[in-house]
Amino acid sequence: MNLDLFTYSALSSKARASYGRLLTAEDYNMLIDMKNVNEIAGYLKKNTYYSEILSNVDEALIHRGQLENIIKTDIMKEYDKFLRFTSGNARKFLQSTYKKYETESLKIIFRRLETVGGVMSAEGYLLFLKNTSEIDFHKLIKSKDSLEFIENLKGTEYYDVLRPFTGTGVKINLFNLEMVLDLHYFKFLYKRMKKYLTGKDFMPLEESFGVKTDVLNMLWIYRCKKYYNMKKEIIRSYILPFNAGIRKETLNRLIEAEDIEEFLEIAGTTKYSSIFIRDIDGFFEVNFADYMYNIHMKLFRKYPLSVTAAVDYIHMKEYELSNIISIIEGIRYGLPAEKIRKFVVGFDLRGV
Image 1 (cartoon, rainbow, N blue to C red):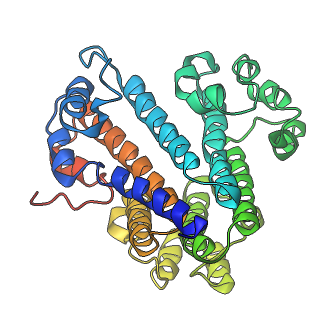
Image 2: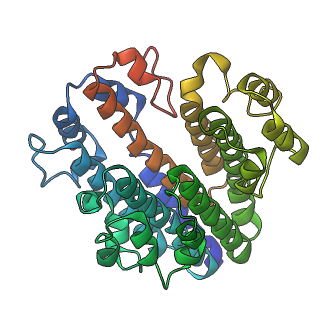
């Protein structure tokens, strides 16, 4: 058997076995019927594949942050397992996807510094940065404010990316900073895709990448207009330079839209019109997540002998974590079950 085929066959088998264990619609409906995070942890421990990682956990004492971190740790373990089944350029690309967790960890730190003024309490949410990243985690969490934090990133690629924020003389805008980090991450990821992947590996990942950046650009324009009253030239500076189904002239029309009504009219003419449904404004992000879940599902099935099998599975597992957190938060705030169901992506829970 060809070595590449053997490698991808093993990777695909591992991804499909893992996919078969993901939570079902029935599981989600059961979780929605729970009363608190302890009952949710108990259900996951006794009735799902999470029994293994929760075996030593007392569900009666667990809190939301602990459960979230346990599942995040499991996602990282899945990545490590997949890496053992790959080699060469495919392995190098899979390793590069860790950058997403590194970027998200930095954003968590900035949010803490800008909202509660300290990082130490966020340590439990920074497992990747603490255990996997080459960045000096212990130095970063001692930062007293955002400017010191950026200084503590000297010697890393992120310092040059964020240094412009240190010379403004005004309070750092959290939204702008996160946009810059996201832009850096997507440019990095696309560069690595083009460097390490070809053919059946590159095509499906380019497709999902293009769709994601298309919709992120649209969502960012929407937020900039609705919540930040941002100037058009500044909006353009944050646009991701990739596209799959949105022409540049359409993107420009979205930026030039005089108000949200005009933005939604233009968005309604694109292939992503189902995401921007007018009467459920607060669910644009949920619609986007659901759209991407289905893209990853389609590609997972279409390209079994490809590195995309592992990448798309991991994305679906990340959405599973998001679904569990949405259910916990919905129960915490006393939302009715029918509303919580609307936040669960990838499944139609009606009638289940």
